Image (cartoon, one colour):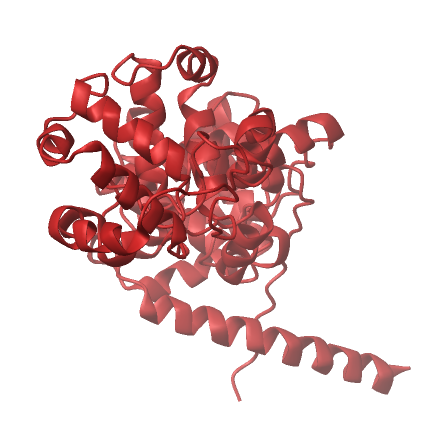
Length: 413
């Protein structure tokens, strides 16, 4: 039994050796807070029961009003810190002390603490049982997932457009524009023009009026990601003559064969011929307000416009540069690379985010996005997050079960 126990102890120590080695390497790679050696926060990781007891006294005097003695926050935008990685807690308090974060309540709480008090209170809260995760609300989770996927949200709105424009935006009704292969920026701007009356069309104005700004952007993205196809409608006119006219009058803005590189200029390749003709007439008459287009079509006669329509209708549209945004699951994979599986970090310097309050998590992500919190890695990660992404990620991690990590010192050889 004695030998078995010795073997088990050696195995546990070897297991923890890898964790501590990684932690030490991480500490060496992090910039020192306020000029301190970043390795000093390992004291909080390897604190003794006596150190933790002293840290409890500090918590009672300076931290419990907001974070509670158990580290389970009940106040909005105040984080749970029970079971948080102690090296991280210590380092963050040093940042507040140095004025690196504009949070008066935190600055006031830690500004008079000496280094001994900081690492011991970090060790105390790190030793506690984490707060339980929030219960999963299937309806709320599904709603958050829907908000976080703009392509699905756009498809849901676009379903009402299919009767005229085709299920995926490929027109089979003469006079109805093809909606595929348009840059989302152009699609959005054109729909807003219908909404505010800059483009005259009663039905489109009524339809656009019922869409929110987010709806418009989601629909634009949905159509931009569909397979580009030519409109399935007839095209009268002389395409050969239209090609010569296009080279002389249109290619400078709309690109070779009707495919442009500009986000604000529409692609014309594969467009319905009748719609093209009506649009040119509207620019010519001033029913569509656009000085550039009005000047461009002023010298075109009716026959030339029909020839242009026939030429562009025969051209093959190409995919746009639009890309589907990352799903919540894909964002989680990226976050877990640093913060551990389901947000349970095993690095004493990297915060655990499993079970964290959603409102606080949202606040922090916004702070990194705006630069209020400084971190090159987090700024790069959060810079492309949408509001829906932030809400979905915060809700996801709030539902994950947080787990404590025990660090065991390895005796020197």
